Image 1 (spheres, rainbow, N blue to C red):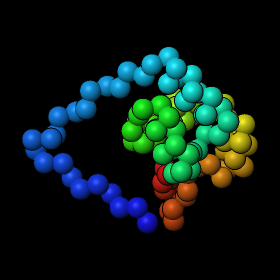
Image 2 (tube, rainbow, N blue to C red):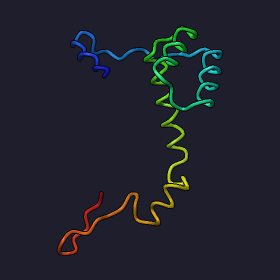
Image 3 (tube, one colour):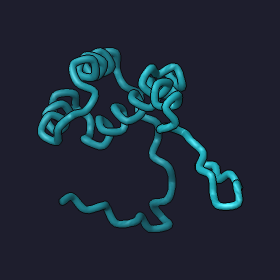
Amino acid sequence: PRSRKPKRSKAQDEKRPRTAFTNDQLQRLKKEFDDCRYLTEIRRKSLADQLGLTESQIKIWFQNKRAKIKKSVGSRNPLALQLMEQGLYNHSTVKQGNEIDEN
């Protein structure tokens, strides 16, 4: 299994500057995302080499893109609506004494 990177020291706590992707990089990232929303480690490495970006930049771009889509779809997701109707998604449970516990 992959291990996490060690924590940064206080001298390194400054945020990295925002990555400004070129139009070519964005077009390629969007095309890859349209083909498959999740990259394998091998594909991520290959794409990073081809685009001149770090694997981390590729990984974060894909994470952000998935989050943006999820946020824009929101509760309009048909599966989420169906599960909500069945009480299997975003539901409340009833404790003894009829106290409602929001999950």
